[in-house]
Image 1 (cartoon, rainbow, N blue to C red):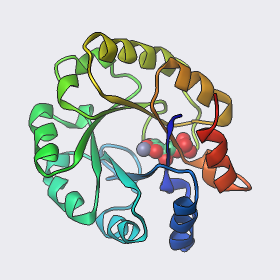
Image 2 (tube, protein in one colour):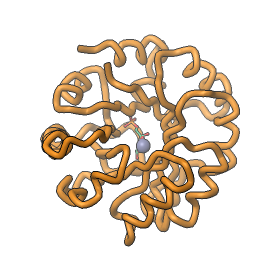
Image 3 (cartoon, rainbow, N blue to C red):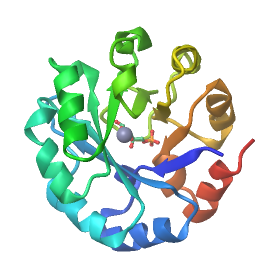
Image 4 (cartoon, rainbow, N blue to C red):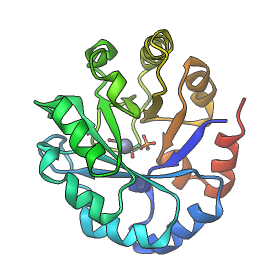
Length: 216
Ligand code: DX5
Ligand code: ZN
């Protein structure tokens, strides 16, 4: 069964506590928290104080996706705010090896995200050091965009790389995930599904989460 990571970017911020409660009572495994700085991506979302509050509402795994420049400047602060996993973009890291080790030495799981244009082969010398690869299936910055079909090929290639090297790295897919494409994404080799609009804009988000969790 896939790990389901609802993205709170699509939640109702006026009722954030209720949304967290709903996720706690649901089949969701992770909380996916999207941080945007208005520089790495053309949008600004939320940051440390909001994550600190969300952390207080849940015991579930907090998966923080940093869409920011110079993520190394904030790793320690996100640890303090309660992140369990910190994912940085390869395109934002001049010293990826250093950044990954910084995250792990702070006691968090380390994730690396790839934009749609970034080949999975760019991770060939890093794969052994990381816990999760986040494959962006839309251009990062906004919820509610359409899944880029070529992503399934990238997932398959990455799955093969991980398998051939006998590694234990999770593949997370983020952007445009729906009930229609989720099965193909899982069959391509994904372990973690992030979904924002499809969950939070549905009539019954809890039921939608269960549906994604139990697809085959
Ligand atoms: C996009 C974010 C995603 C986003 C997904 O930059 O990283 O996590 O919230 O939203 P949907 O599922 O609506 O594409
Ligand atoms: Zn995300």
